[in-house]
Length: 66
Image (cartoon, rainbow, N blue to C red; front, side, top):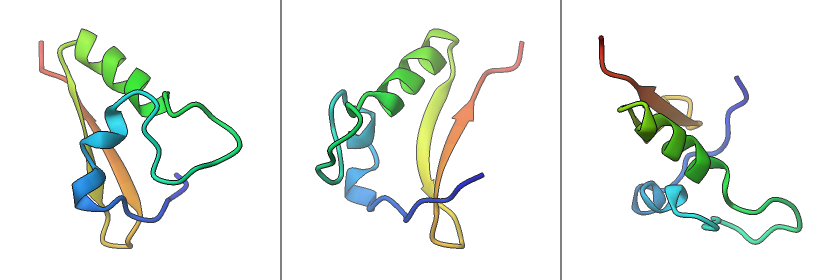
């Protein structure tokens, strides 16, 4: 797993919005986490952003038990 600096709490819900980016960049469209969220929700799951003790960002994905 490759860690990234922690996403600030006030941005954690917004990173799932289409085209939202924390910083301007020359590459990417800002759709990655939005697509992840859509797929997870279609399977009745949920995705959330958390801060790891190391300071990295974690994306937690959960699915209901059958």
